[in-house]
Structures are given as structure tokens and as C-alpha cells.
Image (cartoon, rainbow, N blue to C red; front, top):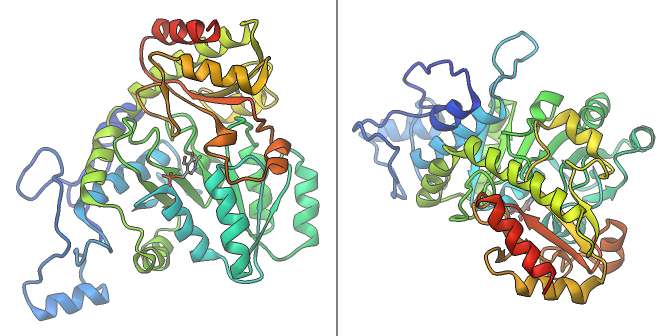
Length: 412
Ligand SMILES: Cc1ncc(COP(=O)(O)O)c(C=O)c1O
């Protein structure tokens, strides 16, 4: 359902787009798009109902298929992921987004829309645990296999693509969970184009504020909106954003509607409000993260810090190339291993012991026993997810308080 009745102001800054882009003026003049808590929408006549079903007339029908509260968040996110980008004719790049109940629901829509038995997905190790399980445990039963390869070796990637015509999709996550390894979007996505693969990038860790995969030719960008986009940890959600608007509107929306992983109006409303402060929040998250990473790196109890903003990170150069800032996520390992890690986490006073990320609050978790519990130990080890690894999502508190809490917990 398209609802862009008013001509939008051309916004110069990303922060303004976070507040205003894609806004649909409310017919009753509410300032904020209300929570349209309605499962269904009425037709004036039978003919109007028929026209809406056949697509002759734009309009809402049933909330599994779309709702004004979803549309507001979808328009805003599509505008942010394409902000400042141009198409091959020099016109502003346009995308369409579909909001989902969770990141995993959005990913399921993406995979079910494009993959058939016999197809292969080319991806890399160190994906989010749920994505890894979807590719390793659910899709093989449908005849879809995933190949996990080191995407830093572009000639190796090209050799794989040259040898095997069944690769249908390239799936990237950068920075990736929880080692913060980054892949070169430009290099990988140009190979996806060359070998006619559908490409998708999980941009959850960066947010469009720090990285826009469409700039490098991705077909789809995907987010767990649960994280930085919502920003306050108030709702689970996911979004799939695609550049091919007719395909998104017809085929992808249809798959989404049938699978039924729709969002709900209240969560969409929370997401829309969260998006307004994305730029402001990211600035603070990022400043704090840089200070925390330097503090951890110089601490005698710490063996290793994985943060792409540090010169010691293997993908520092890639992060600098494609991100405006290396972000607010990091992981680290204590010299004394797992036991010291547990002692540290248990001694935290302000930072929360919790999975998830991208909230205002600093969150600390233990991937081996939490987010990556379902990934076999040998595979985890290969991806650098050791038993002693601690992951941190640096929040927007004052840096002094975060450093104080980490310092006292490290000495506990
Ligand atoms: C990078 C990344 N992608 C995808 C997901 C899945 O999203 P959701 O939990 O919203 O389904 C997560 C969740 O933690 C994630 O961190």
C-alpha cells in the first residue's frame, strides 16, 4: 500500500531523515502516526473491496498484509538505508521495506522468496547464531545448502562461484557476531553481481547511520530492528529492505503475507519513535565504544579485544573503508579464561548481564553459552568464539560510569 500523499521536503542531513523521512501525515492530523490497533480495514463497497484485493486500488485490507503503523516505520527505514545514494541515472535511490515480527522472520521471508531445492547460499563463518542454525538445521531439509567460506579471500570466493552454478545467494553479515570480523562489501558484492547471485547484508551491528550496503550494490539489506534501530530494547522486530520495488511489492510481500511473520502496531510505533534518535544515539554509542576499547586493550587482565576501531583488529582497514565509524559492539577475552570471565560478568554493577544489543544500556553477554549455544563447539572455535569470549554492546551512559564499572569488575 502506497501512501505518499504529501511531497516530502528534501532533507539535507541524516539526523533530519531519522526524524522525518517517509512520514505519512495522519488523516485526523495526529502529529505522531497513531498505533493502528485494528486487525482489519473496512471497504465502502464490495467493489472497493474487490479493487483492493486485485491491486487496482491502494489501501489497507488486513493487518497481516500491512498496517499504517508498520508503513511509517518501513518508509523511514527504507529512506535511511538509501539516504544520499543515487541510482545509475543519478536519481535518488529508492527502496521498499517490509517490517516483520523479528529479525529471524524477515530472514525467513528472504530465504523462502529466493531459494529452491538444489540452490546454495555462499556465506562466511561467525554469523549470528540463529542465522547459522537456520542455514545449517532448517534449510538443508528443504534441499538448500550453505557454504561457509573465508570471504576475505576474494579469489577463493570467485573460484567457488566459477566452479558451481548452483550458488543462488550471497549472504553477508558485517561486522559479524561476535568477533566483529568485517567483510569487504565492495569486493564481495561485485562478485555476487558478476555471477548473478542475489545478495543480502545483515546490517544490524552497524545501522544505516554507520554503513549503507546499498552503496556497494547489495540487493537486500536486513536488520534485527530489536537492536540499534529501536534503540531502547522495547520490542523484537525485523525488517527486510529491497531495491527492486515491484519485486518487493508483489513477490516478497506475498511470501511475507503467507508466512505470517508480521509485526504488530504497538511494536512498530515503538520502533518509529526509536528511529528518531538513531543518529544522536549512535554518536554517543560510538564515542563511548572507542574509549572502552582503548581501556580494555590496555588492561593487564585482558588477552585480546575484538573491536574494528582498534589498529590491532584484522579488519580495521575494511571497517574504515566502508563504515563512517566502527560502531559500538566489541568482544574480548580475559587472560585467565572462562572462570575469570564469569567472575567479571557477575561482578558488574551498572552494565546489564543480558544478550541482545543496541540498547541505551550497556549489555554484556557470554556468546559460547548464550547466543551461540546452538553452534557446535568445533565450528565456534574456528570462528574465534572461544569459551572465554565476552561480548559487549556499549551503551549511551556517561563513559566514566561504564569504565568505572568495567574497572571494578575486572579487579573483583
Ligand atoms: C546480527 C543479528 N542478526 C539477526 C538477529 C536475529 O534477530 P531477532 O532476534 O530480532 O529475530 C540477531 C539477534 O540477535 C542479530 O544479532
